[in-house]
Length: 267
Image (cartoon, rainbow, N blue to C red; front, side, top):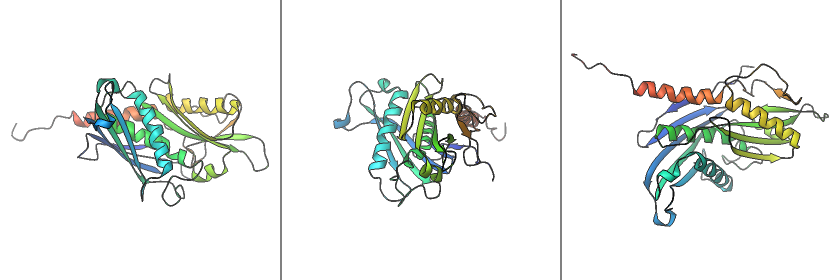
């Protein structure tokens, strides 16, 4: 089976937004727009800092309780990295449109299946951060995220393994699913969402593997974590991309295009 494609990002695909980005990875494609600082309605006005508003739109239909939960999770995370104190009485709005998802990941195109709704969180966060960078909205740091699942190695086995960027099938079999996000420096855990049952030892191994993917430049070829749990490097669990390096290269490529001098005819 062919290995999963690496992440792909396109910055500023939308002409009518202050900033925008399209991000694709692990079967998800998200288009994000960011606008701000803009005028905020009086009832939402905060005299000390900007109001951050996050709206998630599913691939079809209207959002439900699961989307509203993810709205809240992302809002709290983005408030940690945006310099909201610089823009009191203003609004920073991020709209995230789900374009495509892995097969069978939505039920009725909604995020309402336990364990599966966490799988889209890394793509939502990465696209939001890229859109904020495109809009030149000041941030104290960027963020990178990854999803992981703990699965039994066999149906009759008590041993477990970690699968990264889990598929819908993985989520349906998982003992627990997790999404973690780290600051660019790797010194702060910005987001930790989990579903299912797990031990503290399993959590420590999930945390270590997530930090390795999000914060280190490159991964070793070992298939066992430091604590002994197997780490699945199968085709649909792409652990190869260095997410921090990917984010840096995406923005660097956009800056290089913006700063290119164009020859003027006749000169």
